Length: 524
Ligand code: ADP
Image (spheres, rainbow, N blue to C red):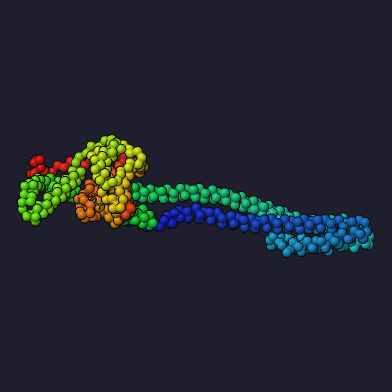
């Protein structure tokens, strides 16, 4: 069954909703707590102001009594001032309290205290003051009845009740404010700690989930890399990761198809290569057998033609002599061709042993072999600098030097004697020696730089320079059998330089031919 799909962002963010909701709730409760505390503080403030006013009313009551008594006792008008001021102050404080009553009961009590004071004033205080204006005795008689005192005590009692109640309210408001503050602190600390814990736990859970998904993707990718292209990555249920997995599958399929195609073309290439080298071997063997077996009839033709020439020279007519001369010349050319072809086959097919070869002595020997040719040309072969000892096959190396020096002398310019310089330099990549055979001959056009290495490829007619066009093909093959190479620089009319590299680690020789020989091989 297919797992329900979700997106990477919802996988990462959804678990954080709860901790953030909790954080939001903590914030809201802190705001509510702060509001509530402000309200409690306001109530405390109001209660304190009301308490101050009630205390002021009690003080006013005492001032009224003191002033009124003072006048009754002394009869001095000065004492009436505090009494009158007290009345105004009581009135003023009552009005202030009336504007901010705590409750209807308090307003009622205030009105009661005010009416009790009026009653005292009407019934006791003012009559006693009037009586004192008449006589002290009349006033004392009134005071001693104790009515005024009781009336004023009633006022005080009402005010005391109000004060006690206000004190109660004040304490309740202070307690409520303290409680609110404590609750806010508790909720904030606990909420923050809980949110933090939830955040850490959630982050760890999310990290583990992501790591699990990525881990299974990595394991799948690793198996694909190891060549298990059919391996299916597990579905994670996360849209983006499943998309990535699908891309992995496509990539694996593409890589597999490419590998298969490569393997197919490698197989084809190998088959073609095998076919090519088989037909190459067959061709080489054919060339060897053909050239070897052609030698025998050619030798017969050549001997009989020479015999014919010796015996009948001058006895036949002049045309017959000319025909015989042409035949001898053609058989000579054919002999050279067949011998060169044989050399080519031998160089290509022979099995070689490799060992140290002193190229200085080898070049000296080759120069000696070519002495007649060099002397006839009027030129010279110079060895510039020391020539090294290399690991190679002496026969092949001799062939290379012989061919290159021979060509350098042969393809000389008509207006100057040949000057051939043989030298060697060290090469580092790959490590080995590069030999140079430089001449001042006719030179070669750059477009023929490759062609001249082909079999039977010549740039001149036989009338100009002798040869069969096989020499450089054999020479390149000999250089390649050393794991080296043969190439040239040349400037037409100025001269050419042939270079060949012999690496320090030469390739081992090619295997000897195994195919059967032609019928004429046994003959001398
Ligand atoms: P061959 O010497 O028998 O003609 P090669 O294979 O040795 O055959 O040379 C092929 C051709 O390359 C020659 O016919 C000649 O035209 C050209 N060639 C070779 N060496 C030189 C040289 N040193 N200077 C000018 N041309 C050369």
